[in-house]
Image (tube, rainbow, N blue to C red; front, side, top):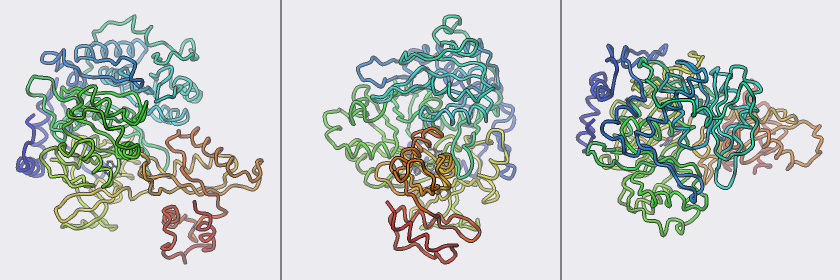
Length: 638
Ligand code: PRX
């Protein structure tokens, strides 16, 4: 695949992708290994919705991520693993070694009853076995559902039950910074309510004592003794499901976003190569790419595993956290491994910025060529800090906007091609046709405007459905503005036609780059015995981007009397138990009433203003059932 090297080439590619999208994508897709070519490049409507790319095409994504490279780069590192503890030796897996291990793991899955189409829940730390398990599922046509290691037993159970998973792959424990996290215990708690699970495969990481139930639980190390490194890849249809990844929306429980084999592969690889100017052509060692996300999120799926490997790149996988053993850890890794491209989240940049430049000093960052940002809006201060102190003003900063549902990056500068502008994701990649719409769905044309961000034409990486509930997919993304995919984001397009994503316009929060629905947090809070009702909103937070502010009404019969601090802690523990620590409110304010309209709807606009500390401009409160409640809330604001 030839890289876009100049802005003229970008414009030409963009034009082609709009004039003849099918020819544009067919040319890119042809570069991959297909067992059988597709017969129809694209078939779509956004009404049902029904989106099919490369119909009739047969492939296996792991043949593209592994086998294809064995003739040309078998001894090149595919994955470089950096453990949580810098004193522990790391692991480098070449393409040959990774191929071997994926085949072995695939055989372990088969031995344990997994067949094509089965769902496998993966709940693991950031160790090579996580990437290996994901690829092993893909090898045999099983559908992986990776659950981020920070989610609670209840969240795991919800996801397992929704997808009716047959097998869980997990570890005894996990290392995160100076903490040891129980993984198997959490899975055991989850499985009390998961009758579909027949087998739990447990790898050892911390060698913590764990319960091992006969007939259900097996040790990965034992299983590996019984298998060979030969495993023929299953032939998959381009539109067969590759994976499910759960993500939060404004209502209800998280939904399982579904991505399919052909389109997702093409899109993850194309965007990886294009945005990061990732060149594998020379036959020499390609750049070392360090994506700091967890494979439990879409960023890890697309830009730690599938994008880099489908491209023949080298991907660095880091087990730990940015602040352990100190806030210089990322820069230590960059220095030690000579990282060329780093891809991280604004929340990490802000927290490292807060730790001070002394943590950057003393690390040789001269290997860096490109800096990426993802997951939330990047504020100007963080953008400049990253540019000045990490890139030393010689590395382009690519602020990449996209979503779990989009499979890969949609709006972003192309490194060294697109002129960057702090806080702007800049321009759509080839193949992406963004539109801004007003509340009524009318397209807002021209520049210097803002509105709700929609996309009007499919790209290969767009979600196909939400698992088990297609109607929910239609409702959530394709019904607000008929004929368009609605992103849920607000956006402005400046005089240069550059896009800046301003944040969600629905009830979805983005806390430290983690996507959380306000309704989900409310449901969790409401599960506390003493809570009558709650309302959750986001507020600006210096490090996390958004913090969680909860207004809570309790009953009068708290056994702990008026010890509100203890009640708050109980509520936090409840949320941790129901969702996980990432959803814990930063602030809890006890109130006796919530601002509701006469029809009973909570006026969140008012609660948001109060949480933001903007109590002078609450707007019209005359439609409230009891306007007095607002004064009380204002007085008690934290
Ligand atoms: O609001 C946008 C924000 O993150 C949301 C998607 O979250 P998730 O599905 O978890 O995927 C995150 C990783 C791709 C979007 O709706 N978002 C993501 N990237 C950016 C962003 N907001 C502003 N600028 C970005 N670069």
